[in-house]
Image (cartoon, rainbow, N blue to C red):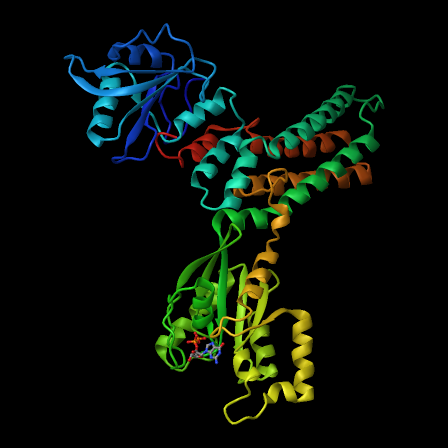
Length: 483
Ligand code: GDP
């Protein structure tokens, strides 16, 4: 099938020789124009004079002039030759490293088009690599992730997925499951006769094994997603608690406007904090005290919206002026099950030095209130710090990082970071739960076979063993041209 039926790829011929700029548009020291397809080498050969490219070995590089039809030199360039099937796309591939002027790049691409190539569609190089069996679907997706990776951990996850990651594991388990599915379907062929080719206990063991693996993969998604997209971390607390000051201390720069007037930080201000390769997107909010004026009300509503959208809430309070009862009330308002909460008891510098009038902090002296504080500290991770003096800021960073423990981030550990995979795994889990349930209650073979087939489809979607034109179109059309 040379066509994919999808709005982006509709009616394009996948047998065509394609051309695109592989480096970013614009000028640089060099730019790379890439050709892929049956005629890639012959097309390049027509405009390259130094050597006959059709006769050179694969994986060789050649310096020479590239001329247009009027024999006018367009550029002196390095031409790399990759012969099928030993290339990224498994087709003939030519990469022309030219001088990085927009004009030269444009001239080259137009020349190649006049010689018979056509402009590549979005992601078409990688699409072809997938269709020609160079990589499975999840590996192809990892190529895009790798290119987009902006932190060490995102890079590691993409790299691991590109090198096979968990897709090999899934492929193997799926093969084992196919074996059972066919045995059960064979039983169905025997109709009336009471035969059992598929050993139910073995099937149960296999399903249990797959379920364990899928659950582990699903659990890894929170981390994977956080690493890929950054962790939304919202700072909330009452006006003057020290949120802006804390944000500055974390980011080490004067980002938010700090002021003594309650409720001046009305807009959400973002900064990105990188802790050991994980990016935390810090969001400051305008306090959660009941709004008194209109502008503040918008801020407060925004706070609740931001809190709902975030995966970590850093609740900041001034431990010298807010009673534990009020802290407790705030936390109750903000807490929801999915949220990771870190409580910051701010302004320890004041307590340490005693207050201006020399009185010790009343909330720590009062035994009943102290009991509430202790209970809260049992329930929530609490860091006592001074945002102003920047003491114990590292402790807060450590707590932030530990919520997404780094131990799991290494190239050997499979982490799901792609929401398409996550959804497919979730559906596979449901089908396999149904299989398990069916086995326990001794359901008939045809129902069992149906649930197994569903699971097989979902697992196959991850690796692309099962793919539809829509699925492929949606994945690759989100790539850029040239990838
Ligand atoms: P926000 O309204 O929660 O954003 O609070 P700000 O960051 O604007 O801080 C309010 C006031 O508290 C400012 O005057 C800060 O300088 C002060 N402040 C913030 N953190 C500390 C701290 O750790 N110690 C002391 N002594 N003052 C602080």
